[in-house]
Amino acid sequence: MRPTATQTSAAGLFYAVTLCATWVALLGWPGLLPSLMCLLVWGQVFSNYKRELGLFRLDHSDQTVPSQHPQLTSTSCPNICPTAQGPNNSTKTFSLWKAFLGTVCIIGLAIASFLYLPPKSDSDPMRHAEISMRVIARAIQTYHRDNGSLPPIVTYDAFGKPMHSWRALILEQLGETSLGSAYRLDEPWNSPHNSALAKYRPWHFQIFDKESADAADSQTSQSTTVQGFIESDGTFVVAEHENWNCNWLEPREVSRQDAVLELLATPQLKQGFWFEGFLVSTFRGRIAVRDQMPICVQPNCARKSRQDQWDAIEPKHQLLHRVVHSHHITQLLVLLTAVLLPLYHLRRIPVFE
Image (cartoon, rainbow, N blue to C red; front, side):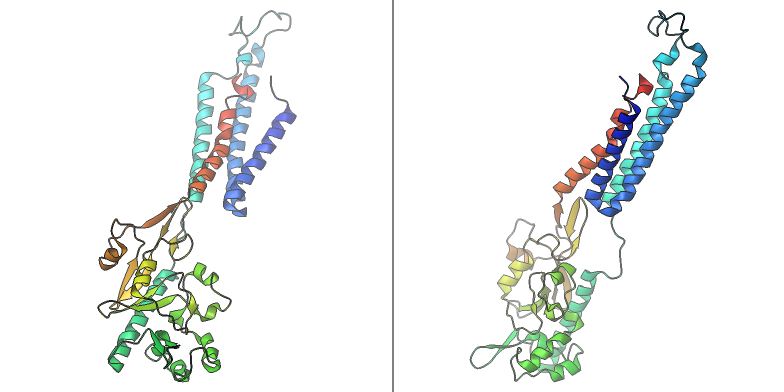
């Protein structure tokens, strides 16, 4: 039984709405563009089918069964009534090939949309963080040369109360001469005078990772994720971690063991520096500077202790931490099913009856 024109129109409208909703659910409102392109391709395929059927019936209109011989049917006389059989196999195969090519184009469009990677930009936050931390490490070496010792991680008063952070002690070596002169070392870091200077945070102490900056407190312009710790051999290490968020003037001492464990810990998705993809996201690593040598620290993926891995870090030979988005794979399969659904119905339309 052939569907009526109303049923066909209703089915087409339902499919169009379903396809658009699927694309929009996956890509947002920009998904309307590929959904419309899919509908245009399938509309062209179906219109070609209808045109071929119309041309076939027009060419064979003079071979239809006469009304005065109703006993003749397509079964008894197939050569007399070819219209009842529809287009031949060659026409059917050619039309299916066109439908297949249209389907390939749609699948390519879907894959290109999901696997699209944004172009590289000069404003790479991880690159800026690495440059800033190298500048900080150079300022620490200058402090060492000027004062004969490395800056302490935290200075304390006579009662053991934290007074100042190492970040405040290297302001002049960092090129912040005016800020360093205005900062009072005889007052606590959170005194009214010193607290008023927190809003003038040096550029090199800013939070370069956008997600970490958004997760910071309301005073984001005063926060930093850069910390320092002393190695067992006396080396000053400057490192950044997405969870080391504090006021840049706050004296916070991080032990070497805790710092190494956190640097090698598994990151949370979208926290830190990531290459985000639709199917797979790759963690780019955390930055540490040791002896003015930047190191990209990856999470502990090797079968060794975290301490051994830290001591044997080789920046160019590390396992990358990746996250596979299984729910996105499911969504992609649902979309491809919706995109390919008309191919199934092409074999059921009246053209091939």
